[in-house]
Amino acid sequence: MKKAVVFGGGNIGRGLAGRIFYEAGYSVSFVDVNMDLNRGLNEKHEYPLYITMGDSYDKRSVKNVCAVDGRDMDAICKACDEAEIAATACGVNVLPIITKSIAAVIKHRYAAGNKTPFNFILCENKIDVHLYVRELLRDLLTEEEYAFSEKYIGFCQSSIGCMVPAPPKEIIAENPLTVCVEDYNKIYTDKSGAVGEFPEIPNIIAYEPFSYYINRKLFMHNMSHCVCAYLGYKKGYDFIWQAIGDPEIKAHVKAALNETASAMSKHYGTDIEELNAHADDLIKRYGNKLLGDTVKRVGGDPKRKLSVGDRLVGASKFCLENGVVPEHIIPAILIGFEFDPEGDPTASEVSSFYKENGLKAALEKYCSLKLDDELYKLIVKAAE
Image 1 (cartoon, rainbow, N blue to C red):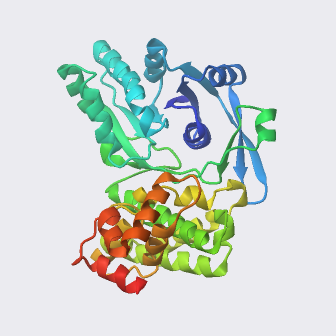
Image 2: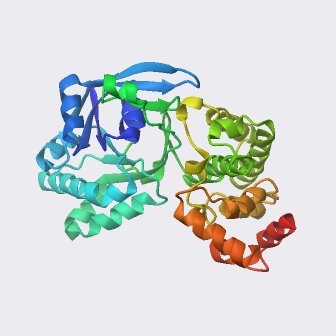
Image 3: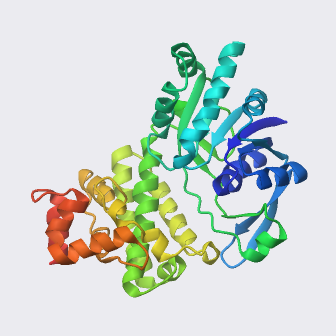
């Protein structure tokens, strides 16, 4: 049986990466420091997966799994020696720690003269995360080891669009290894980051230019999710499924997706029908009640989400660059300045500044837009 190593046994590690590898016929070793999790995986060699299907769960099992202590470098190196591929799904904040384990693997392979290409799929929510990992490795490897890693170790940034809700307490009580996940099992990864032949694994789509999937995730998925949240906030909804169930909001979100789909199609020369199908799938997924996703969470941290390169302003600028007017994204930007749920410090900061200083000052401060920017003028006109 082919083997894979996944650094991080959390929700994305087990709910997405582990599931995909298992369904492709791999056995999976999870590297983690949670001893209760590791003990459970090594005792049972499987874990339950509850697929959210809107109003019910489809219970499945991911089998042929084990765990490796994240502090045991020898065991980690041995697991990677036996594996065909590895993935990380630990969170950006933990990457500096995980990279120490990756450095140990590289040192081990260098010392052994192992020149077999080995690739890491980086399932982390950070653009250019592969460059970030390489930079971290510079301080952990000798010049010779680093040169070896550039030639024989690949790092592929990925686009992760899977939503993973917290399992209900009664399900966790039944089996603490349980993961709940939406019915979505695809990882899009950067083919140009791989060394050697990237293995053909169903539902791991290696593609270049990868900016297509980075922008599709940010300007379609993240954008429309945020538009839905802000329109839902304006109407007093608590959950995303409630907001997208409102016909007026649903039509507005669909129209916003049509704008970015048109811009994506023009920019990359891709089939508009494929992008429209992706938009329809996103709207369907937002209606999944069992995800339990809240308007407060999805719209949270407007200081970041209103910034110039992010999902709303970034998507709007991308549309304008490709000859599309983002008239259905702009209203969400305006609501974003008003978004102020309890317990969100950046929302409180942004909304307070907006109330005290007005729209034009807020556009300059939080969106980095200037008086002569086309988008600045369109937003001001829409507000008027």
